[in-house]
Length: 137
Image 1: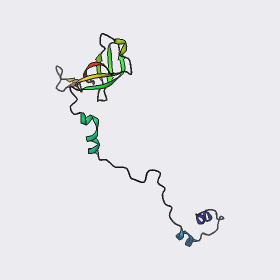
Image 2 (image 1 turned 90 degrees about the horizontal axis):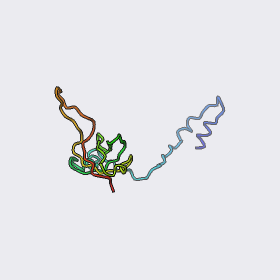
Image 3 (image 1 turned 90 degrees about the vertical axis):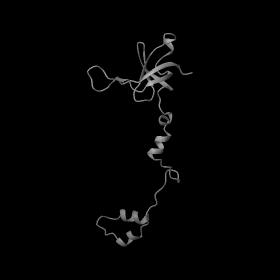
Image 4 (image 1 turned 45 degrees about the vertical axis):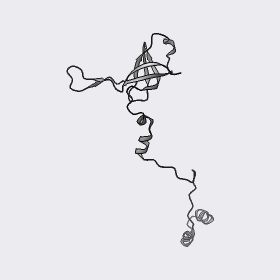
């Protein structure tokens, strides 16, 4: 290290002895993380261990969702799926269903889509179909 500093601190115009550069030892890298390399998982193993994949067909299953928006009597519930689920507030205890509350929802369909009169393709409503069971306790 001293040789390197001596070379860098030379006077302007002073020649460098190239033979001294051959004797410089390479610096060993410092490990900032653990010495054991982390286990690298493949996409297939990550996909198999995913909770969504392990759940299988979600139709008919009860899942926990979070109310993220309320418009009059409609609750917009995030289920962690492609689309949110829109359910109506129950007639009793409406004041308990507030934004941020966790609720139980039975999934009927992951995507509401239907072929309407005059169309050749299905048209999606960009929401999931579910039945609100109640608040998560």
